Length: 372
Image (cartoon, rainbow, N blue to C red; front, side, top):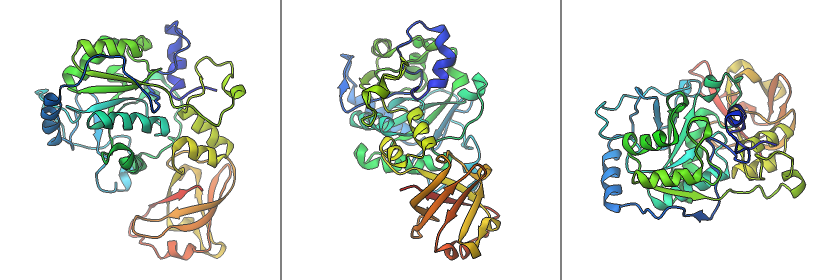
């Protein structure tokens, strides 16, 4: 079994002889911080940078491939759930500041937003203002086949907001970097970018984190380079998958040490083990459906949505009881059961009329199904 970020590592492993390392982009973490650096953040610098960055939280650097999205925006409208990038104004080109200036960035490829990713955000929040620094566009660069995300793009903000109580009432903000813009950077060049372009105050990464061209940098080098460039580096241990027994962890795959990963989430979803999925995610899995009135068959109390209208990864084919339909933030949830087959997602409920009476001013609307 491969850990999260495994497709990138498979592509790059031919270039690197340390096969025991886990990922170039996905940081894992645990409750323990392994402080590998003697460097400490300078509070005065952190405060000054944070004050400058606060005024620019709704901007991005499009010229260098940076994308920024805040976890405290209003609910996204429909088109944001289908577009791959958000349309934001550009930052000034003088390089004076960025949205993450003065912040503490967690490094990774945050596909599933699972409990390991949450722990990274928690540790970042204990040091300063937390951000998730994600690499996007890797599939396009490597020519991978497209696959459904575990978390729908328009649902990521909700998940990050739900981490607020874990992070000292500081919900992390996600900041995206186009992978193509950093793909060929050496480890030193990447850290220089963090320091001089993004102006971050510190970074948090998992013990198996790898970075730089051909995954040539590891956590120890990250600490060394960050100290050299005057930013803090905090390396934390992996969150282990407690459900996996020793036999399953010793699968013969040197990249899998039994840590929580996005790949484990995908495999649990495929198996239809929703209790296990909830353990890995730290929350119930939520499926986002794009529906039209024609999808509702009121006489059968069934909502049938083609899989092409599903915005993120559904569980494997089967019948799922004790689910909930979530129509909107201000409307009560509706108990339902879900049938997943090869072509459709069928949602069955005794209260389907509530959906029929909903606002259909738009041709399509979004519906959330949460699996118990």
